[in-house]
Image (cartoon, rainbow, N blue to C red; front, side, top):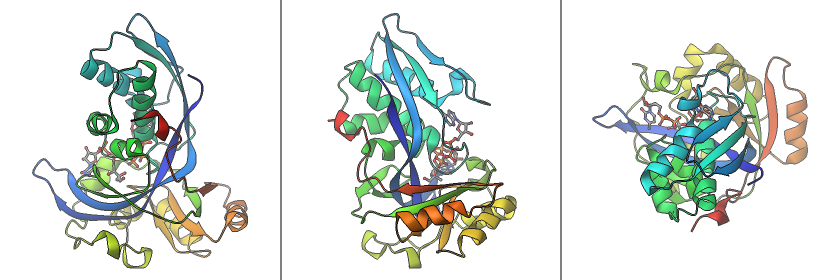
Length: 276
Ligand SMILES: C[C@](O)(CO)[C@H](O)COP(=O)(O)OP(=O)(O)OC[C@H]1O[C@@H](n2ccc(N)nc2=O)[C@H](O)[C@@H]1O
Ligand SMILES: Nc1ncnc2c1ncn2[C@@H]1O[C@H](COP(=O)(O)OP(=O)(O)OP(=O)(O)O)[C@@H](O)[C@H]1O
């Protein structure tokens, strides 16, 4: 199957409201799909092997979320088919844009279709959660208000928007941020109706800014144009623009040591219709 997109996400806000006995954090967040992303290509193999074609710097094939997703789908369904998978990596890794999670979600959706393993959306989301807290959202496939560790999802209706996304050139380790002693873990829960950019924040942002000064610098730079915030556990930061022209103008001003994109919201995951 040619060219399957794996879109990125933004966390419009992210509150840490508690911690589970296993150490995972209870969150509230608004997830938004955007039109930046990786691309994947899948070919079916009759011999049952799962092969990653090409390499991903720093990630061994057996650890790649794409390979792990394919093998987990085989294990859960007893499917005897295999796959050759090519990943065209465009999103920064450790960027808070959910790149690895989205790659895994696209793999589950595409192979469930190609292998005809017949799992519905809920079953795919359950498998996805074993791979990462963000994977169920990408399979859910639309903007969402998330609770739990990010797997309890409710639809959010948001107007279309343009964003500027800046990658400050550092990779932030998600476990490092969540395990920080100074992390705020007791933000008062809000209701979905009370969600507004002005009254929310990203609780992971102060921790990441403290440890990665380039994240703080990127937030400050972007704040000259519009209110700016970090997504996920960082390192990327974003701001909403008034429209495409403004987004592109800000991008063209970005300091050369960083990367910036103008990104549009996506109403649905591009593979939404492939899942029942
Ligand atoms: C920060 C977010 O990007 C927000 O969308 C996600 O919650 C992170 O999701 P992710 O990158 O898929 O993270 P995972 O691979 O599931 O978890 C990496 C590590 O982060 C910590 N972690 C993650 C999610 C969560 N709700 N609580 C945590 O404490 C755990 O130590 C975990 O071992
Ligand atoms: N296919 C993959 N793409 C990216 N990272 C992968 C992949 N497979 C495994 N990984 C590992 O997962 C780590 C996190 O990558 P990812 O790009 O998803 O981070 P992120 O954007 O910060 O995610 P999140 O927003 O979910 O915190 C990488 O540093 C890498 O070691």
